[in-house]
Image (tube, rainbow, N blue to C red; front, top):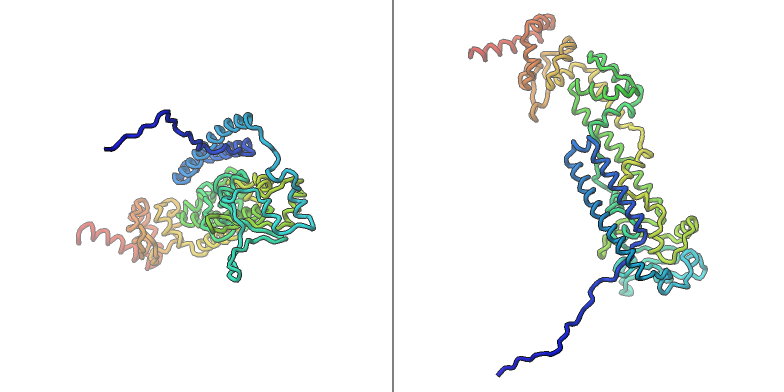
Length: 445
């Protein structure tokens, strides 16, 4: 027979699994930083140029919403932290380091030994690791620290928290220290300011191009009310693809400047920062003790651990995504490649003006075509792309295949017939073939 055991006066054991509250230093500074970032994102989203770019706008909105949520969490944490500090006064003295000298004194001492730094990191064991290598001779791991320097591995999130930085911003800066596929976004409106980047010599050539093709567009360097004149000229001449090349050159110039600005900003740090994906860590921080001492003396830093040092880096505020818009101007070059590209395009159509007529046909710009009809070679065979297909033909054939209604209608007018009779024999023959071909098709001959 089985018996059921009963327990009288049973009381469940209560287990306190709540994690100890962790105080976040400089929480007000973090809140202000997030508020600034949200304001900046809202300003960029509200720009009309951003609304036209769906992908860019969506990314900016996502970033804004993430920051808003972080701000809410941080403000809530601040309330809890204030209550926690009231009930648990903080002992400012460091555990086991109450009477210890600061880092400057330690590292400057003639008695400093390389292993003295081990107890001055101030981080939990899972937050860092000394970089090093495995010594196969002694079958042991040798950490990388000496009397002159040390190198530690750290997670990206840990370093961001210590320096009170936006998420991912260090990775954003570091990507420019090596190969990257970053693309600086340039919208169409940027072409309106292109005249600022071009030399006077090239501006004069653009003026000449506009007058040569009788576009009626006046190019006046530096005049605000004429800033759209240059892109308007290229659009009227059917050179939209060339404008895209100009945008690409502007983008690449900004990318080069952004790379220089990010590298320069990283060099302001009092340690060398680099990628090191090993043992679950992301970054390597290399500290040269001489550089470290100079930095702490310069800023009168009285810190006892590397953790405290990282929490008080003066340049931390400069590591923001706004670097792309605020500091890049300091590193912009002379747009030499843009000038060369624009000059090549302008020279091409000044030297061979007949090449412009296939462009005019593609955009069906009868007004400019008619003003310059005497410059065209109507029977010459051109190579063009129509709906992604390579097409060979004279101007009549290209007009027919591109379905340029205004120009096709003008080609069949009495006015054009009178004009073409003044051209050479080959142009007249090409015209007759075009007209008779229309009749053959019309009457099914």
